[in-house]
Structure formats: structure tokens, C-alpha cells
Length: 173
View (cartoon, rainbow, N blue to C red):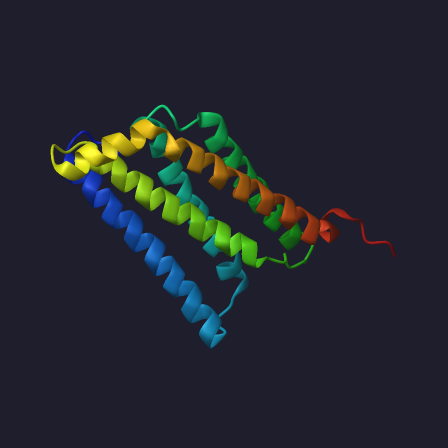
């Protein structure tokens, strides 16, 4: 939807993205509050986050050339690797530990994507906010912010590996 040339589709895609992000947050909040956990939910919730963020990140280079494919690829690689780790842990009957920084990473990614994608919609308009959006994109600040998001993402990936290194060890009997 976002990549369609008509403004209405891009704008609607922002509403869909925001709704998905907000409902994901409340889903997690409700699950924690009422202790509603399942192995399926533990696996699918982060996977749904990845699909949502992947969809957003894929759109960035189409907004402006400052969004480097290699940085987006590194974010994808981290998330795919962590998903494979989860599958591997599940096969071994182990639970992966998560960290607060991983939750912060998801919030940072969602916030960055929402603002950046929204600016990408405004760029298509001939109103004052469109001029301001074009100015902001012209500064290159969002390309730098992508690198910050990438660094946070990679850091949390390394943290996951360190916290869950037991997954990679063989059980000695």
C-alpha cells in the first residue's frame, strides 16, 4: 500500500502500520498483566513484530536514497538470526531469555519507522508540512537515525547471543 503512487494508499498504510504497532503493544501488556502466555504466543509475537518492521524498512529506500540497503539488510539479518535461535532453542526444549533492551529496540524501530514513513507520505503533498518534510529529508538526519536504529538492533542481537549462549552448548551427560 505504501509504495502506491496515490497519496490515499500511502496515508492508509500509515494508519494500518500504526494500528498494528499499537495493538501489538496492548496485546503484550494484556498478556503480561493477566499471565496469558503460551509457547505459540512467545514465538509468534516477536515474529509478527519482525514482519511489521520488515515491511516498514523495505519502504525506506523508496522514500529517499539516504536509507542504505546494507543497513536495512543488517537489521534483517539480526532479526532472522534471532528467529533461528528461537527455533533452535525450542527444538532443544530451552526457553530464550529476553532483555529490556530488546523491547526498547522494538519501540525505537517502530517509532523511527512511523515518523519516517509519515514524512515519506507528506513529501508527496503540496502543503507546508510537505515542504518541511522535504527539508528534513534533505538534511540527511533520517539516514543517520537509521544507522542509530541499526546499531541498537545489532547490539541487542549480540546481547541475545550472550544471554542465551547455553543454546549453543551441548548437554554433557
